[in-house]
Image (cartoon, rainbow, N blue to C red; front, top):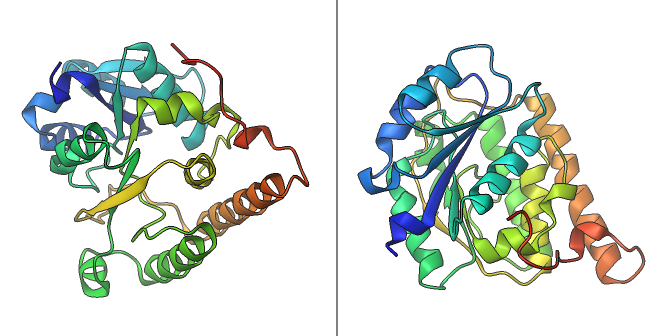
Length: 254
């Protein structure tokens, strides 16, 4: 089985009509076959455009949140038989051409989880129009999380991620937040289960149509990340039994 055949690209979407086609066409040609878009009750033409592009489309009958959207994405990818899953926002913010590299690192066994690192240098991030406040929060929180969790990632908050099937059938992500804190909970869980996490540099584009959470929601997201780390250590010290850090049994969601 080829790398592209075993890899599914999942897109958690909400009002992505303006950028979806550009994002899809940015994917390497061989990775455009297995693309699942989960629409979180968009009010624009996201679903129609996705269907016209030939994507596998799953819809929520109400807006459930970013984390809930990812839960559906991964469940659908596993059900379809994916061995590698790449999560790509359909807002054309990330360079989708690196999808092959993300998948290859997992296929080779070098990593179980791979993130796209948006911040190779301060100038590159800011020249890509990353807001200054977002750059500052990202740098400080990434330093803290690396230090506490013993990792060496360049960007703990990237929305471009790839996972092996084993990761998705081990981590009980169904218990995570339905909002933006989902991403950070997932990484803390990956650390707790001893998965190998790596990253690759990826250019990022900030523009009006690209999705981005505001300052207030960023603080809430940060609080969720700190909470996940806090409860991880309580669980590790056996001071609190947290089901988020207990592996699933069997090949779940299939």
